[in-house]
Length: 67
Ligand SMILES: [Zn+2]
Image (cartoon, rainbow, N blue to C red; front, side, top):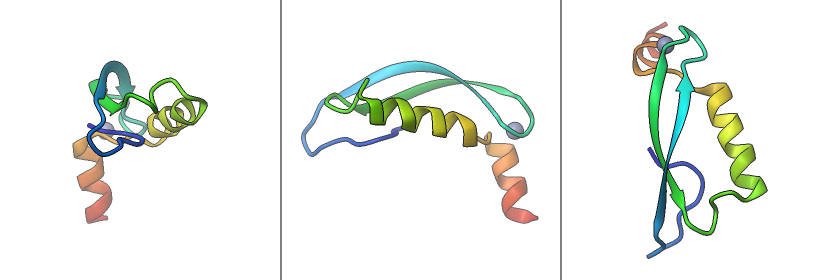
């Protein structure tokens, strides 16, 4: 999964982040990627926090779409 900003022709940084579904609590091993210049910036940290706060696993996301 790619979050944040990746510039054209920019190298991506791969990192592991434990993400839990905000609905069912299922933990997902998150192999995430973002652009090298974006990684570890304050914006990046904020976006990662928001991403984790709103994360739904595939099953819950499908359910939400159907409801
Ligand atoms: Zn879930």
